[in-house]
Length: 379
Image (cartoon, rainbow, N blue to C red; front, side, top):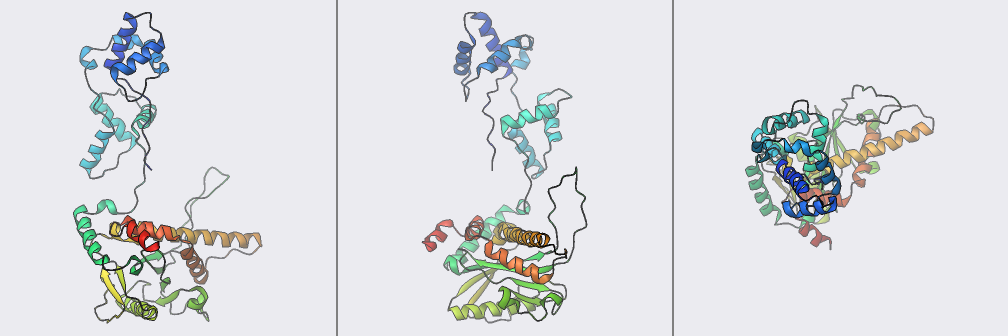
């Protein structure tokens, strides 16, 4: 969300000087007359308020003593100047202290100026603090644009419902949220659990079909999954690798399962995957699945899963996990760390809770599939 600059009208030193001179020359004018004259004379974007005029006239002695050279000096410091600095620095970080330093250097703002001046500057320029998200700021725009055009040609050969994406993410299922409500002054942090598995998340472009979540752990049969059929119970699949990562062998096994599913549905699909060494299907002959890798060094911008789908899934998981723990507390049960089976159950429930609209919006955010195409198919 972009904050709009304040509607407050700021007059320059020269304009304030002219206003004071006009008030002295035409004594009969009241503040209303001076307000109308000021707005018309200086062609301000918004009408000048009477309180602004009164405040200037009360301090008219300050503007009478201003040197002529300073009256004609234009203000150089603005939000535009800050953006120029960020571009020069390569999207550098701008803090409040740096804004004050820039103002002192460029406009001669007096020493001792601090948060009050900074707050007012932010109010009238619309400047505000924003966290950086993702890694798209590190990408080469030319490479991303070229990759997007390439994907448009490939994707254009299929209906949106037949275009799929798959991505893997580390799933630290015992990690707690960083923030909490508390009655004290502060909450002590604690070391987060590093117990994790890899989960593969996939869906088509219109959100009408979500591939079963595919978990990769280190154990052949983890104790919580013993004597359980997780596909029948939860609609997810589980396999193992030495480091709980996706490998070429595991990728090929997963692809064969997807190909068998599409064969049953009599569908031909396009499957987009990241350009990594483990996504190697050269040894396979797939009759229903065409695998296409995303262009190198474009994942942060062109991978739909990274645009918010995986983030939404993990948020939903935390909601399910929190609800289950609260229920245990109410029932007087002893707290126990999350086991893999419950983590998979809550994750599967969270995957169902991610809205179709969220999935569609994340696909369209990449730019190689348009919302027009998706809406046409949905209608």
